[in-house]
Length: 287
View (tube, one colour):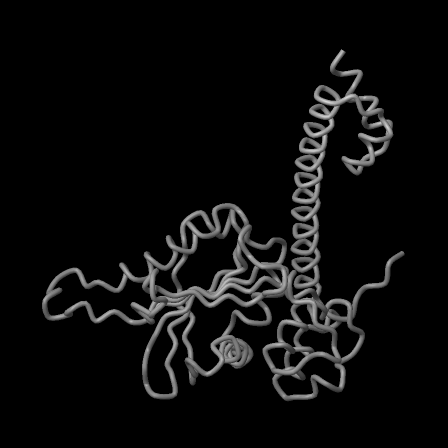
């Protein structure tokens, strides 16, 4: 029987909401977001908006936070934090932020309003996938509107930050900034058995205390276990889909080699990185 990990997995819907999605814990979210902005914004306070996006919580996961933030300079801006989904990620990001902008428009007196739009930012944590055009060594991407030819920023108050956790591969002795520490925790908390010395700061001490599985009520444990199972079920489905897609590609490659060359099965297997039985089965299917 597998031993229950001491800490919950922060990248499940239940844990993500528990750690970052309520007023008592908003200091954790503020600390994380301030590290993500790396000084460009400094959040002093935030309010969780009660907006529900129709259909999303049921079919797309419920870990989406719509936040009204106040900066240390009094500026107000909106942030949406979500655990990004793979399907049509860029289109979803544009849809979410466009809605957050359009919802600011008053029903009337737009001339008086003068399009005084608050800044809108989307921050997406990508755990199970990376974008197709993303360099393997990069994990933090900060996107804004800019001039295509010069690279000069056209508008800085609409931004997209996506973090590819799969590409964050730093070890504990390589962590240099608090953002490094946050991303390391998101990737590794559920496999830790204690709060390590390099995370001995009040914000991380609170985070780990809240994340202890033993501190959950019986009902919360059931909800977490269900959320964890859903995460692994989704991962298994994704892994299977990737495996099947890879199989189709290799099968097509083997077919082409069989039809267009006089290579023997061993040579084809070597070129396609498959075993000879795979090649034999493809060859039989062509007969």
